[in-house]
Length: 180
Length: 252
Length: 74
Image 1 (cartoon, helix red, strand yellow):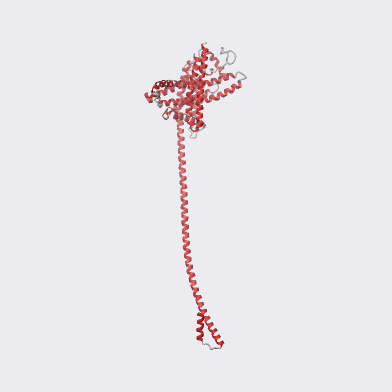
Image 2 (cartoon, one colour):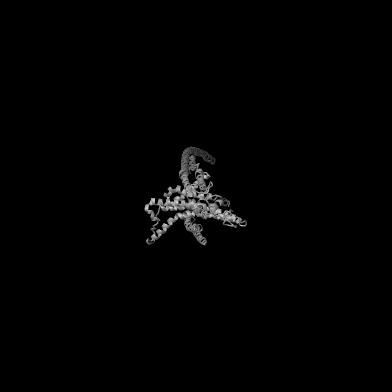
């Protein structure tokens, strides 16, 4: 209310002429309109020449930066996807390669194994044949020995019984028995 | 209270809610010529200073990442720009600086007027009538320049029955010419009424018993007035956009 | 006497401000009811809300103007 106190003096002076509302005192309208128009023109020029183009430029620049950043991010994302694909591809390739190497190694080993088996088989059969031959020889030797022993034994047995043994007949009889 | 000066009132409460709107010469003297700097001139100039401070100095660094003051300027820019674009249409964007000027002046005049002991320029009909008449003239001229006689189609409601159209045309014509009246008095009336009510409550503060109530009431009214100061600037601007839309696209 | 009648007239004209207040309350209340039904559409209609309030208020302003004229100009 301090304004009222200071206003009072001037108000008392023009109270007689002014209506109750200062707004309806048309004597100072010209003054207000004049200064208002100046104010508006100044604000208009400040805004339209300096402030608004500047803010528009800043906003456009920011929009551009954001768009660029988004584009860069998209690019990086695409690169990352690409890299992942390449990695997966490499992984698959490596797996196929590994399979191939394993198969190869298996085949090689199999071949070597087959070779070795065949060689061993051959050796074994050769040795077996040799052994059979030796056994046959030994057996033949043994049969001969047995026949000799049987001959001698038969001759002895005949002689012991008091007969006179015909060596050839005994031998023949022994041989018959042995065959039988 | 200057009861002696107002000899008519004697004793009791003295209310002079309208004294705050008196226009005085700034540098003494009694007569107010059309060029005399007055308190109205001072507060208009301060509004210009405030606009320049916010929109020019606040944005002087043109940073891509805005400082606090710059983002306020950008907020005001985006707010009005979007309003013009949404309400008045894309082709109204060339009127954007003009509408921005109106908004910035009104909003700063209203807020500066809320400073205690200050003078509220927008509480004077002289100011708001000029603002509204400028809008009215702009809209009318733009309407006739862009649409020629077709602008008169605004008053000829083609969707109504033929018999009603002349009556509606008269009503539309009246409402068209009443626009600057309501446009200007809405702003000045709201601002003036709020300030006057605060002053009336301040007058009650002279009684010791009710002064706490009166202080609380002043505080509440002040809060409301802060809201009103912005809303009235917003309403003035958005109505300007609506009128501009009528001028650019007169078909209903 | 005539001045007192003008004051009474001003008071009667001020009733119109109350009528405008009812209108503004209607606009805001219906807006709120609609906004609660369909909150997603509310934000896009704030401009319409303010335009509606402004038009409803315009007629209250005329009564205010009449009151002012009766108080100070007659």
